[in-house]
Length: 293
Length: 326
Image 1: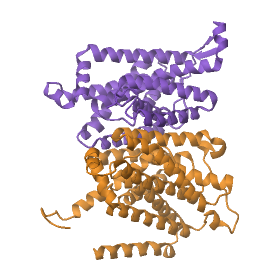
Image 2: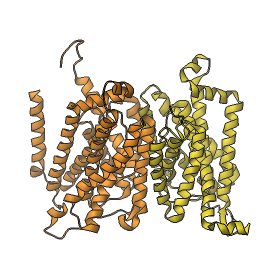
Image 3: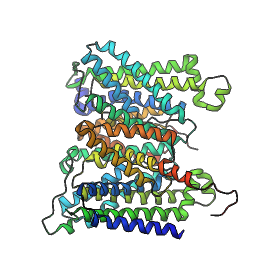
Image 4: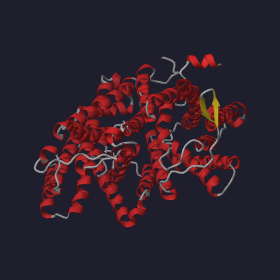
């Protein structure tokens, strides 16, 4: 073990592992966005803001009402799931026949609403849960348990979605609607209900991400901006609506951010990721896994 | 048609005469802000009206403002040269991002998300280079020594700024009209309907889109630089980032995307709304203006997608006869 560790730069290795751990959460976010895009053909620009609301929910339940973390997490997930369903019902449903750009811009309006709602309701202070998980030390490397927990929970969440989609009637119906929107309503599937369930699922994924991110980051009204754009890049790089592509792209981006952050500031990691993205657009414009036509 | 030109000429003359008759500094300040932002919104609508929805314009505006200010502070380059340089920088950025998008047919959602990321990244770069740009605390161009205000494009006089902003705004409207009357408009409309069909009809899709994007990005950078010179303070949140991009979209949609004065109406509404809330609520208003923006944006997109001016003009216009000529 020691000899193995000596051959690598210890910080490099630590950054690589941290990158993988970050990738788990990013993959979770990308999955939620891809699910909604794949089924409803809508992009929620405000997706990261849903996460932000979930993080505030966790903060209030744990810090203000004194609930234990494990009890607050399911409530937060349900809360954001309900928010996702409401977003679909109030904003997206009336616009389903409008040009797709209008739906996207409307969710942009929701981004404004959620951000400023948080500013008005919660103030602009940075808040955190006050839970400090211990740090795991392997050799000279340090990993926080919060990141490990986030990674494992994100993977479990994705697995749960996978089995739901493959094993249940509703999941099968969702996949069928994603393949052909018009036909499925003729086949006796209530597309309105499927859309609502999908939106709630997408919201639930955002809620899960919120529960995990709140352990690592402070909450403030603009926290969504720090991982929203990167989630969109991941989805485009993986191919919008392509679940596997989004999963791979999440880990690629997480590595770039983590390694870029190792040599310089974290912001430069993001900048590097964007430069990489532009280059990839020249090489694989339709996404990592797209077949060449 | 002649009466229309006359109306424009009278309106413009009245606008030019205004600061010599009416000198209330606060109201002039609001007017200057409205004119500068109208110009920025107009430049967004030049590409937005063809279905090229960009959320990257916050990025172009940030480049315009920051490059101008940085060149002046660090290299003593006068804004008279710095502003064109900043426009070139924004234009290059636009080409680098837009070329692969258009070349490889990245449209709709994809295009929006890519440009959205662009404005996010410009914000990150400004924050990351905080040693030079002051990061999120903002940045102030150095005051020029007295008597050299013209060289530094810094004027204490509101009237001067009003006339500059008015001139730029008129130029923006003329560019809008020029695009509206050009062949590019028909090409772009064909492209927004069906790219393949347009390409088959002999339209150079990539070149036409790049041309429109470039015009729009250059104008936006100019707006950013002017805003910087006028306010003498810029911060990443006021001139770049996703919020600014969305604000442009919002104002244009509210005013009217397909009419030349639509963005101006949008700017008047948004700025008066923000100022009204600020005066009415004081410091408690932080966040309220954006909350109202957001609700209005959603409501407008659902119920009035043509915007206020667009819908009003539709009402006023006589119903077209089946085979009538213009």
